[in-house]
Each structure stands twice: as structure tokens, then as C-alpha cells.
Length: 269
Ligand SMILES: C[S@@+](CC[C@H](N)C(=O)[O-])C[C@H]1O[C@@H](n2cnc3c(N)ncnc32)[C@H](O)[C@@H]1O
Image (cartoon, rainbow, N blue to C red):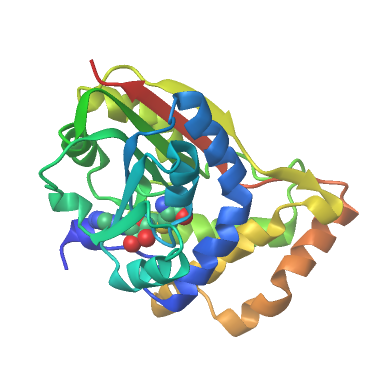
């Protein structure tokens, strides 16, 4: 497997289910971004790194029955799961492809992607390759995370521990944990027009604190963290972690942010 191919969150039915859980939080934000960027009826759209297919569904809803979405991923298990779950959506087609060597031999009206560039060794190179898959005037819409900001209005011990583990896993594995805020520079480095930027994030306090999102991310990283000898999952008490985190933040009247999402979109000249 090439470096470009490595994906720390794993390839399994568990990762499929984790992505589905995560999409409940992110989908409204992505839908808003696609709307604003101008994904509209009749378009042909490429969704890169589709995972469980949730971004493809958003695009398919917007392009309607006269449009078409090709959803690609390098993970066969994810593709099989998505294909099966979305078999009632014939306007979405799934195909295996590695973004490190993408050459589909066709062009699209729009290309969309969420939380994918951050996992790639060379996001700029992939953006350059994506531009070759866009027709003149085509739309590029990327939605990426930034984990570097304060996660809550009050620092609490458990949240600090979760944050430190998630960031450590990302850093050790070479994931771009601040790619959201670097999207503008990445578009420029790839020779693309300056993108329009958007910013949004899940946020809440008390019972609405998005604790689950962070625990969900940590859960996916646990096998890697354990393998590296950084943490023992039993010690962490994963099963009760979301509740303990919520309770701890609640006791401090804290506001909790989920991952901040940067949107970047531009039209090719
Ligand atoms: C965090 S998931 C995001 C999935 C989906 N875009 C979403 O937001 O729900 C990242 C996805 O990118 C895929 N991926 C990572 N590296 C890839 C590569 N080099 N080529 C194609 N897909 C890749 C992974 O297999 C995974 O499905």
C-alpha cells in the first residue's frame, strides 16, 4: 500500500457505521455548503472518498433525477456497504479509485469531497488532479475539518485527555488536522482560482454538547493508539466516555464545539 493510500481510521464495517453516525452531525453543514456553492439540478458530480456515501446522497438530492453522481473510494468494504445501503438511488454510481492516481478519463460539472484531503499525503497534488476532471466552468467544493482551536469554553480534564489523544494520533499518523484553515493556500498552490470560504461547526451545551462526535473520532483511532502503546482502551472506559464527558462539561456550564468545518469552493475559469 502506498503512503498516499494509508488511512488511519481503518477499513471495516465498524468504520462504515462510525461514518454514518458522524454524518448526522456533518450532513446539514455539508448540504448548506453544496447549496451555497451552486450544486444544482442536472449536474454530473464526482464525490471523492465517499466512505459510507453520505456526501454522495447530499449531492444526488441536489442534482435530482436528471443528474448523476459518481462516488469513488479506495476502500472496497466501504464501497460495498454504501452500494448496498443506497441501492434504491440509481443516480449514484460507485467505483473503486485511489485519489493518488485518479484518472477517470472523463470530466464532471462539479467535484465534492468531505474530510478526505486531510488524510492524503499530498492534498495539493490531488487538487491538481481533480482540476483535470472538471469541465471548464466546473465547480470544486471541498469541506474539511480543523481540530486545532479550543474545543470548549472551559478546559476540563477528560476533554483535555480526549483532545490530546485525538491530536496525537493525527500527528503521529501524518493527518492534516488543520487542513480546513489551510484550504485556501492549498487551492492556490494547486493553481486553482481563489476559493470562497465558509465556516461552520456543531456546537452545544448540556445535553446538546456534541461530546459523542469526539468520542466517535477517538474510538476510530483507538486501535492505532493501542498499537502504538499510547493508550489502553480499557483504562479509558470507552463505553461510558460520552456520558462522562457530557457530565463533566455540564458541571462547568461549558459550551462544546464539534470539529470546525471549513468549506472552500471555486469555479474553474
Ligand atoms: C473520514 S472518511 C470521509 C468519508 C465521507 N467523505 C464522509 O464525509 O462521510 C475518508 C474517506 O476517504 C477515503 N480515502 C482515504 N484515502 C483515500 C485515497 N487515497 N483514495 C481514495 N479514497 C481515500 C477513505 O477510504 C474514507 O472512506
